[in-house]
Length: 216
Image 1 (cartoon, rainbow, N blue to C red):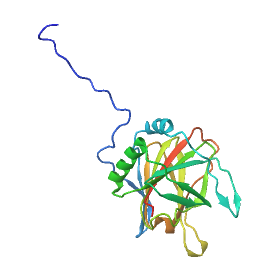
Image 2 (tube, helix red, strand yellow):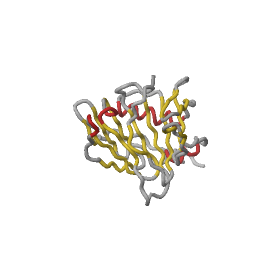
Image 3 (cartoon, rainbow, N blue to C red):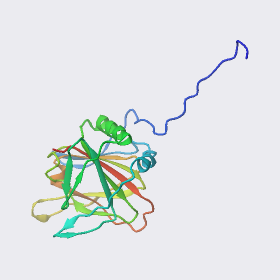
């Protein structure tokens, strides 16, 4: 080796790319007191495989409707600050400790949305799984706090519609959510709108959805 030999350090490309410096959200729906915003492709799709490797326990969703328990195709788990639990659909799910990948995603979601979160509900949707019309208005959730939803895996349709007094509803607004998309529901959105993940016969593959929330 001569004195003129030069060395060049080559850094490996990270598995997960950082959040782009500036992506403006699309305004999907809203009123003077509520907003639904969408950031397309904000997160690297590689998070999907990282989460499947990091989280192995995915219990099936078992809601209780009119006193009867139903076993759904959707699987759910949760992470959050110590002592937090979430009661919904006649069941209660306690928060497990934060894992590194979830904490990384959470930090970036907080940077983009400007809101803080202490809990995340993780949903795993097999191809045929769906979720009917509902709002996330349970008492455990801080009223009016932003709910931030990160989608990973196969693209799935998401729908929202306005709810009016007397049972009147507005037109359905379809939102195709792809891998890496971030959607927020802000302000009074949960009292003014409902949302769903509709049935789709031709879906192939699985979707993971992370909904970050601020809980009491």
